[in-house]
Length: 272
Ligand code: NAP
Ligand code: MN
Image (tube, rainbow, N blue to C red):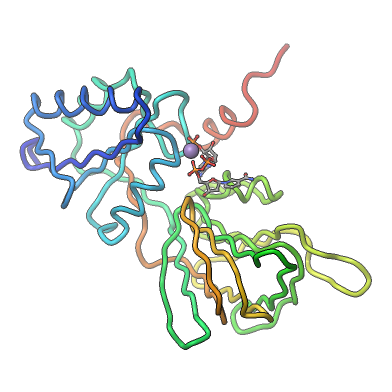
């Protein structure tokens, strides 16, 4: 593919620093004969943090098979961001050398069954978290048609491998390498005593397994899908599986290894 055949979309947050990078990048891409196209892009560049990459994912979630993403971070490196704002020229060079290589990671498919029989489907790049508004959530957790436990507590988070370093990690979940195709179910403040019992630890389920969360009370629940939030007044069931589509990232020489990112984000250098 020649540069002139590659359609590039750019999405940026509103911070001044990101906006400056946005215009600079646009200019450099034009000078190098790339076509700017936000509607049907082959490559999407997100400018901002991991949160911005989540927004880019949701903007193009119906075109996942064609699009490859690149994250450019104004500040430190993120989990979904490969370039920093002073590396624009390096990014342009890598785009010129690009032959279509990609790295792909699993996406979460969430099927929401409403009390009136309606079903809606959403996708998550990080995780989906269900909570009951204001009261203890009581829900049956079913894995592959087997009743696993009756959960009582604040809520349940189901995360992807790349989402395992986000909310899942704060919940005490494990960090999962993104080449492992699995989902992680983590409890949010479960109630455990002599009467009520849940497993207590997070679980990692393989590809093709289906997790179902069936609330006992169908009243007000909130569902957070990455950085989006929804409220439901009549919820009968949520099903979680690995989606048929993956997210593709542009594979570039700058792609920092996953364990390096984890170390960089959470540990830093050890003092001698
Ligand atoms: P935010 O509240 O602005 O950011 C939450 C933080 O999580 C930011 O530092 C963000 O990085 C980082 N982050 C996002 N995805 C990550 C990933 N896959 N691995 C490691 N860190 C990640 O919200 P946001 O930026 O829109 O991100 C939404 C995400 O925030 C949700 O999907 C959820 O995972 C997470 N969250 C975490 C908690 C918690 O830990 N208690 C609570 C609510 C939500 P950037 O600064 O680069 O954007
Ligand atoms: Mn953010």
